[in-house]
Structures are given as C-alpha cells and as structure tokens.
Amino acid sequence: MDAKAHEEKLRAARIESLKHTPAWDELTSVLQEQEEKFWKRHRADVQIGKYPPELELARSMGKLEGIRAILSAPEKAASIMERHSESNSEEAS
Image 1 (spheres, helix red, strand yellow):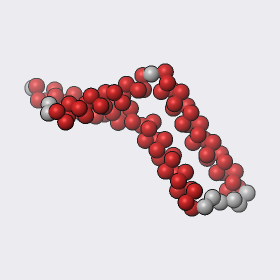
Image 2 (cartoon, one colour; image 1 turned 135 degrees about the vertical axis):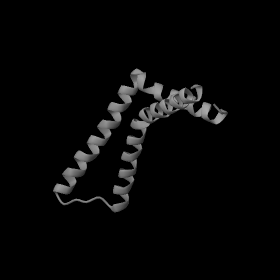
Image 3 (cartoon, helix red, strand yellow; image 1 turned 90 degrees about the vertical axis):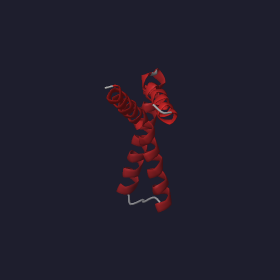
Image 4 (cartoon, helix red, strand yellow; image 1 turned 30 degrees about the horizontal axis):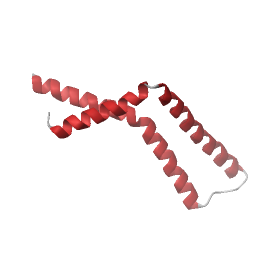
C-alpha cells in the first residue's frame, strides 16, 4: 500500500471511529433537531404566505447539506476502509 493510500485509510478509520463515541449520538441529535426546527418554521411561514428571500433559502439549504455531509461522514469513511481492506486482500491473493 502506498503512503497516500495508507494515510487515506488511517484518516477514514479516525473519522469512522467518531460514530462510536457518546458525543456522536448527541451531535447527531442536535443537528437533526436543527433541521427539524428549520423545516417546521419554513412550513409555518409558507402556510401564511411568508416566503424567505432566495439568498436566505439557499444559505439554509447549504447549511442542511453540510449537516447531512457531517452525519454521513462515518459511513463514507467505513466504505473507504472496506475498499482498502478488499484491495489488500486481493493483493495478498
């Protein structure tokens, strides 16, 4: 395994390990609550005919995408680790 691949595997392992800490569940809960709060407020505003400025809505959508990226990082890291493990197994064969 070259140095770059090795570093990628180590980085993925560190990111994936976040999911196994007590703080991960708390972080997940806080971020999901923020998203739920946004959508509840947005639906209420739209029902009364109050629409946010386009820039504000785009900024909010970007924030929500960021939240989803953070929450999916451990799964993506696990996938990277699995890929490296499979390629190491194939090289050993």
